[in-house]
Length: 542
Ligand SMILES: Cc1cc2nc3c(=O)[nH]c(=O)nc-3n(C[C@H](O)[C@H](O)[C@H](O)COP(=O)(O)OP(=O)(O)OC[C@H]3O[C@@H](n4cnc5c(N)ncnc54)[C@H](O)[C@@H]3O)c2cc1C
Ligand code: SF4
Image (cartoon, rainbow, N blue to C red; front, side):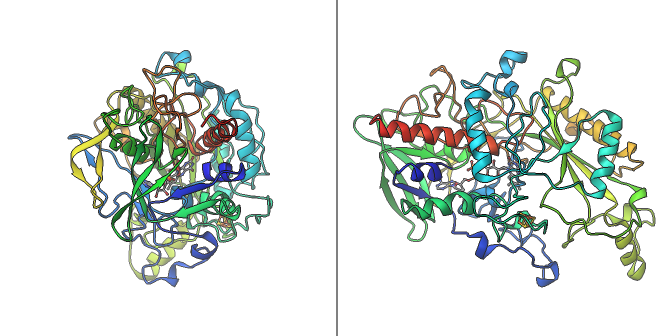
């Protein structure tokens, strides 16, 4: 987004990308059948979500480790390609609401942001117009409506879920996904192949690669250098950032780019890593870190899942359930935390249906009524039971805590000789009580649908089934913004308090999570930051 806005404003930009080139129109595996591959779409080391998935990277990047403090369970997903994780993200594109910017004022926990929803609203509007998002105007208090394209109609199983949600008083509305249901800005409308995570060969969904970086390249003002692993930001004698040093992966040698302004957008934890590794006599604890907060206040979305078998969906009429690559309905947070034993909310994502199966689909057929089998009977059971399972994933807000942070490991380096991150993580009762509530809610939804859950309710000792920190892949807050330079690394323009020509434009500046996925807010915030940089450069202030 920063490259897109700054090149359009007339700046010359160099984009350093640690990973490899990618172009959806050329590289997407859209419309390939599972049987086109001897592996039937199963995962491979560099594509853990399946060999057709668009994201090159994963939980482990060869030669680029990270470490965990004893007792810490934390997983870190890293993309290594142009456009990063936006190549295969779920495209759930939710605005944070007014309350999400003032958590501390509401319940005394965490901190307020130095900006409000109103400060970001014009940028959310512009992101909607530039990129495109479908949804429905609902007028819900803390789930602001956007400038929406029409939503697709719900699928059969989603209508059944909605019926159960209505009976339980849970708000269930059309999803809000950055997928074009009408052509927009020269991009084609979706043809409902349901394979968004493979990358869209006609660019009907959003990835940074084809929707932001490609137009930025067309301006002629963007130089894209791939295979460039940034190690540190350097300073001139006056203490201004004067460029970055990176490892050219092809030669394994060191290289540098001089710059008038430096914008870090390497993902929240990686931007913190670059800052912490940028040590100098002026900043011995890392750049932009005189407050000591870089790496701190790391959060992820909380998550747990429950799936259920719905007998009334067995032997249903086979029909075309194609649609976008994601659910057509979801459930935004609908309750009042003042009446609950946890402080912040969650939303519910729905899954199920008749998507094209690949290797490993419907694992656990032995749990269904005949108890497994062989040969013809087994194949017939797969046909009968396929599509009769629905699932729910809760995605909730974690409060920043002193127990969750990353720092530089004093001993380990990656294959480029760059010191790596060490993570510390511990969930507390706020999150665990929220997860118990998710589990109970999902089980009631399934029983209201007349269904059965095969897995027992996880115990308190198992954290009620809470996912590992990092595993929902919404890491935020390691370079947080604020109004007090003693307690934040960045000011309200995501500009380093310590170095005025250094900015951060990913999830690092976030002061808190929300009961929403973060990327639409990352984009709006990055657009606002880049707009500020462009104006400040024009005024000669940078
Ligand atoms: C499977 C999946 C589903 C998701 N679904 C959703 C969703 O539905 N909704 C939502 O809001 N969010 C979702 N997310 C999260 C979303 O993808 C991220 O919030 C978003 O991509 C973050 O953008 P970013 O630019 O900060 O980081 P990234 O997308 O990770 O991009 C960082 C880029 O920086 C590069 N880089 C890293 N380190 C260096 C370095 N040292 N030098 C040079 N380059 C470097 C990387 O190669 C990468 O290209 C999902 C993520 C995954 C993996
Ligand atoms: S479902 Fe639509 S947006 Fe997604 S890959 Fe298919 S055509 Fe593209």
